[in-house]
Image (tube, rainbow, N blue to C red; front, side):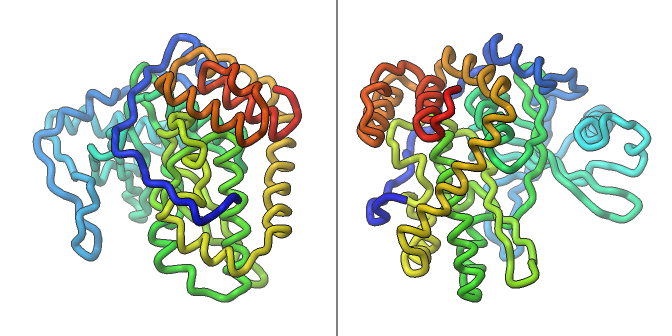
Length: 349
């Protein structure tokens, strides 16, 4: 990680929307991400009323619970259960008998204006979630790069302008930062190790805006202490901003508590060790899926997913960071991602 005393503020302007172009649709079709869905995003917009969704302390969550009239529910709810069966049970309709829709929430705060569908098993009341969103190309590229380059697999499907995503399980990062850092020194070191590796994953594939509420933390009890895994849950800012520091979570002020803890517990040599461990893992993944990654980057290079001024700014920052003028020749975010991967991982893509 670089100088932790430099902090960035998150841009106030809303991210631009970029559609799924025909070349991206062809890529998604090739890798089984396209399916004929029984429900589209626009269908869920036909709700009749909504109420604010509050958390356990009575605070506004920025989500609205939405309600549909009976005729809409009779058509919509079975179709949503069918989508869940497609995602989780390869479309086995027999499992649908035990499932029903318990609640649908809507958020206008996010770029993709998602619907969160809560589905419950009638036999034992166990529940799960999935999301219905507008298919923004930036998010699709982010999901696919996460699936390819991170240790995490992602289930998502598209149909035209509709995007279906699985629920990524974990403790929200902001809650984790505020409530789980006061633990044993052994656990704290493991938290720092995972944050450094997460920081490296975001930087290598240029995923931005990893504020604490844009990722979750898995906590797994181990023989001694806990193991931690940080997972991004918001991919809207995949290769969109122009500032290099935007792609390094340790520069974002919401992560200050973890960063300051790391300064006290980890030296530069150990930090470098953790970074190289993560780079080695990503190199191995690239070797295994090189053809798929090349197909993705071939499409990503030709699509505009950020304003030209942001592309130029990031090219300049990367050229300075790597001391290489090659980045100045890149004219799209996709070409910058490819050049950045090639420079860091050395295996040409």
